[in-house]
Length: 191
Image 1 (cartoon, rainbow, N blue to C red):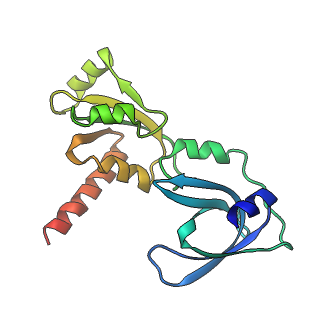
Image 2: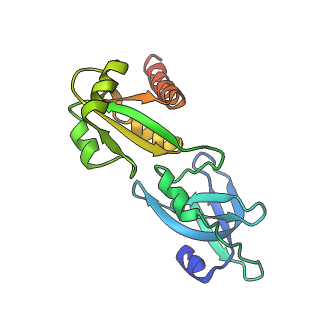
Image 3: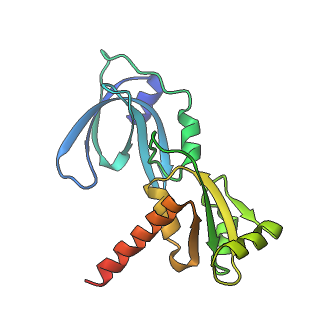
């Protein structure tokens, strides 16, 4: 149904459940695209009342009802481009692209090098690597990388998923988000 509504530029009413809520909700939406991330599909569209771009996991949508009397809201010009600037599907309009510098251990560097975390990923070598080793405290070996994207839940989860094999070096707000994630893990294990 979602794909058909996108192709027909039809406004729909979604009945859905949030991941952490048992109550059913509804929203009227101009649907624009289906996007897959981490083996889950999402419907992305604009809310009829505010025009705000919203994302809904397909497995949380209970029903889709086409509303022929509603006027379809055209997609923003930059819709496909904005998803190039993130990892995952959580897009926040009020955030700016960050250049994120991180170090990866010898154990995980080949994996990160051959399966980039983001399309903007660059492996820093040669003189740049030498200067970074002087500037930052990291274990011997490993490799330095940069990515340029917006901070969101999926970015922090992805960077944190490497545990002690990856250290975010800058910018400080991303470092702080990773530290908070690690601290919350420590707190849970100390209970």
